[in-house]
Length: 77
Image (cartoon, rainbow, N blue to C red; front, side, top):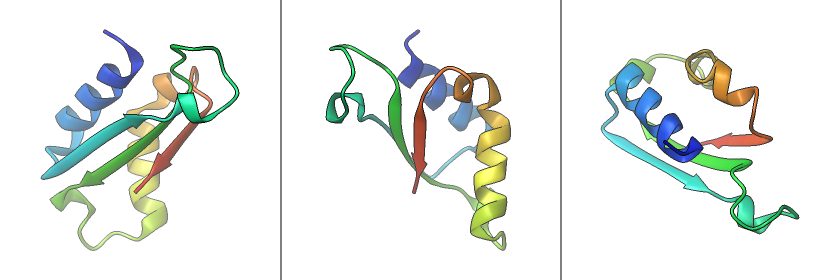
């Protein structure tokens, strides 16, 4: 499974999101073709209700701790 698929699968399992979109934005950066280094994730989940933005980001970062060790950037929306 590619990195985008791994990120999607982990976020689906952890948060059962109503909306989930993981976009590989690596092509927008100075990296070799086919790279998987820069991602954007749009995620909406009831688990984020009543949580501040920093707490939401921490939950996602804890879920993706392994993946964050191998990619360069993950923008959360």
